[in-house]
Image (cartoon, rainbow, N blue to C red; front, side, top):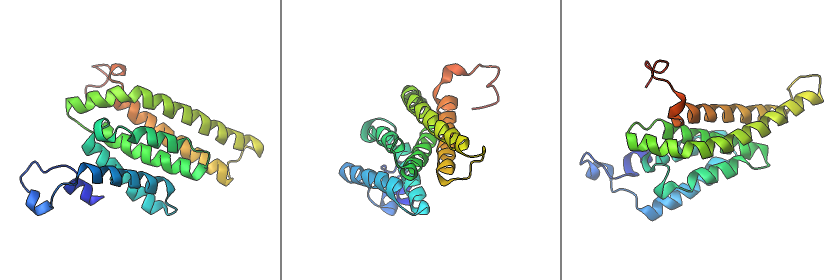
Length: 186
């Protein structure tokens, strides 16, 4: 994950000799595919979390279009899997990527994020409805107690969907903000 910051994009400060040569486009594509697979399919949560973080940092450098245009659809597909664990891992990776993309500050980057936010927000909203319904269904099975592993996974997935929706709404829909209410925030 630290190599992404140092070698993913060409250095703008002239320190290319110290950091090494930038990674080629073909190698980036291969690394991106492997990071998605590791972030979704790794059995160890720590490895999946670090792969998702590296993927998010690479997405921040590349942007949401261009080389990594297929990243968000792949993560949305992984988040919609029937396997609950893989779905939660996919949602974690999606949340990390959306959070990194939302934190970009230059105007072209913000415009790019605002352009993709409605499509992603719609898909994440559908995932939220599915996971919230699963959690409520698990609560209805017992005495209103959510203590089964399926219910815990459904709640975790719904919480990740809500966090991702928040990032998309706050940073991706500029028209929702008003000048007076958002004066103190950037």
